Amino acid sequence: MEKESVAEILKANPWFAALSPPHFEKMVEIATEMSWPAGQTVFREGQRGDYMYLIIEGQVALDIYAPNKGRLTILTLGANEVFGWSAVVPYTQMRTAAARTIKPTCAIALDSAALRAACEADHELGYLVYRRLTNIIAGRLTATRLQLLDVYGGSTGD
Image (cartoon, rainbow, N blue to C red; front, side, top):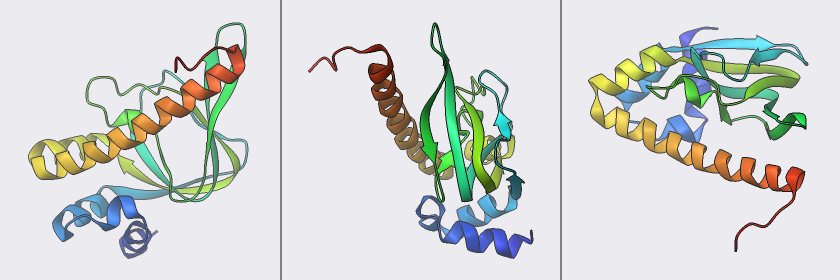
């Protein structure tokens, strides 16, 4: 995919569209397109991550292993949603869940090492990226908690 096409796709996504032109260009520079057939494992839980992904089209399930329950799908993502955020976190870079495609899926992959380096070099960009990641992480934590309450039963504590 041409960088111009990647730029058009990123411009259509609110996660990237609000970036300043220099920050947006940095995202385009480190982005590439990837695609997988339905049923493909994109990455496994605990695996080291090299990319964060923005789904262009398709569907991805995030699964975790739960003792005595096996693999549980905790979230299903579609177009314009981000997954693989843990690859960008500087100290872990380990996948917190497995990702597998439910439908044929096309995504923009952001090189996590290049993204971390860009955030270190430009603290304004770093602030914007990590603020957005924090929102994703908080949403995923809530979704996982609710899913586990459904599986194991229990109170929300309220």
